Image 1 (tube, one colour):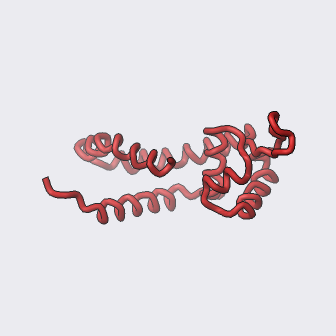
Image 2: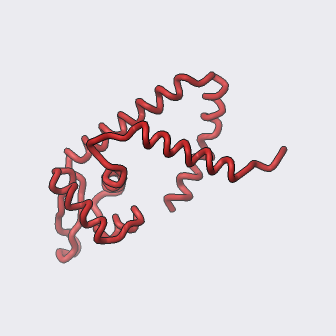
Image 3: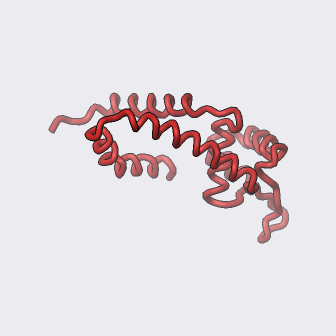
Length: 141
């Protein structure tokens, strides 16, 4: 079997991610806002510095984003029960609803695109899922 062309795979996956991002762009949440809400929904309340690290942005940039999310009612600030000096950012029910709406739009776009593929292409994508999960987990680590 020939050695896979990693440059071609990387470029194709990059283009896929960009195409899906463009196709699922919504007016309600920016990509950084949705990603920040996703971290909070998945892992619970956290410090602004932790969110900034997760999103690979500066702490002042994350502070500004959190202020906008807070003004929109999508997150709240609260004291850490273990250390009252620490302020944690947490997602609100409205934030969860906004995130779920965005995900529903993304899922619908992806389903529509997948529906146009042949059974063989769908099977090939399904067979690739374990590798794609691994790539995703390596990035998240």
